[in-house]
Length: 488
Image (tube, rainbow, N blue to C red; front, side, top):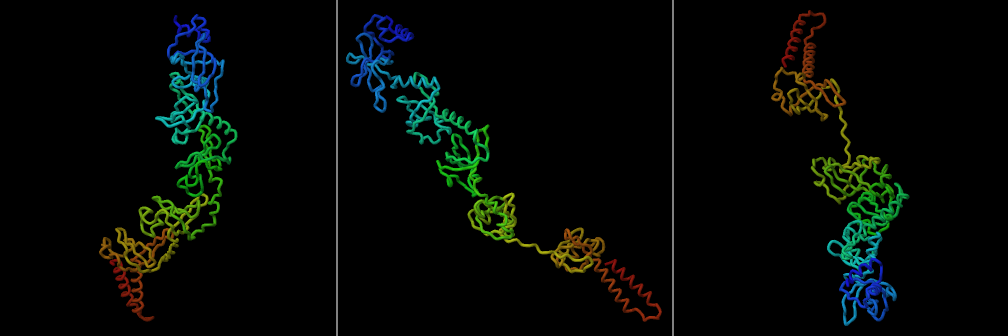
C-alpha cells in the first residue's frame, strides 16, 4: 500500500494520523526517517512525551523540546502536534518536533510572522562574517550589518547581548535561511515620529534632546525619533575644535531650531542661539587706538586672527604684522597660541569685524606745501627725459619741466645736474589735492638778472637835470642782460 500517498491525501483533508491508520486498515504503519506525522499527545511521563501513532502504537518525543527558558512546559495531553520520525530505538519509535535542530513550532511562528509582516524578538548573540547572529527563540537567524541600525552597524559591539524587535526579510529553505532587519522597523518608527513632530516643530522653537553621535563637523541630537544636527559652529560663541571636548554621548542638551527641511528630514539646531551674543557688547568696549592683549587662534595667508574674549576675534592684516618690513606669510612673525599685544584700528559690529595692528597707529605728518612765487632750495633727486625732480626741504618732490630749466634746448641734464646737485627754484604752480608742485629754475635766473640790472641802473643813474647821454648805455646794458638770460 502506498502509505505516503495516503498520508498526503489525508493531510490535504486535515485528517489525523490516527484516522489515516483506521482508513488504511493497518494497526501499525511503517514510517520512513524524516517523515512528518500529525498526532495527539497521549501522555507526559518523566522526560518523554508520548503521542498516538494509531491503534496501540505510540511514539515518544523528548520533553526538553517543549520546555521554555523559564522551565515551564508548553505542551499538554490531548494537544495535536506535528512531528518528524527519527528511528526505532529499543523497540520505541523516536520522533522530534525540531527541524534542523529547531523547534517546528518556533519555525512555524517565524514563518507566520514573515508572511504576516509582523516583527519577532531576537537576541544579538555574536558578530559573524557580514553581520550578526540573532537568536529568535531557539532559532538562529542572520542580520546583516546594514540592517542592525540606521548607520550600518558601525558600532556593532554595543548590540551584543541585547534583545530587539526584528522584521523577517527572508524565510527560505524551510527555515535554514532566515534574514532579519532591525533597520526597517527603525525607519518605520522614525517616519511615524517625523509625522508627529511635523505637527509641533517649527523654526525658532526651543527643544530638548540627547546627544546620539559626535562627529568632527558637529553633534547629532535625538529629539524624539528624529535626529537634528548641531554644527560645530553652532555649539558656542567660543571657537570649538572638537565637539567631544564640550559634549558627551547621552548628554541632554537644549537647542533652538534654526532650519527645518521636511522634504529631506533635516533638522538644524543651535546651542549658540540660546547664549548671549558677545558682539552685542562690543560697541564702546573696544575704542579705536586702544591697546589690548589677545591670543593668536588662526593664521591665514592674509593675516592672523586674534581672540580678544570668548566669541570675539579680530584680524591683524598681514600689512600690519611686519613692523614696516614686507612678509610673505604671518607664520614668519607669529604662531598659533602666542599671546600678543594689539591696537584697535577699526570696529564694525554690524559685520562682526575688528581690525587690529601689532603697532600703534601713527598719524601721517602734515605736509606743508610752498606758496606760488616762493623761492626755495632743493636737491636733485631724479633726472627724467621730461624734466628734473627736485627734493625740497619739506621732504616732498617737485618737478622742474625741461622748459623751466633755463638751459639751451637739447642740453644733457643728466650730465649737467646729477642727483645730489643743489639748486634754487621758484614755485610756479601748486596742486593741493595731489600735492604736486611745479617748479622753475629759469624764473629764479630771470629774477636774478632783473635785480642785477636794477642795481646797475641805480649805480649809474646821473643826477637830476644832467643830460641823458647815459640813457643809451643803459639801454645797451639792458639788452645785453636779456641776451645773456636767453643764452643761459
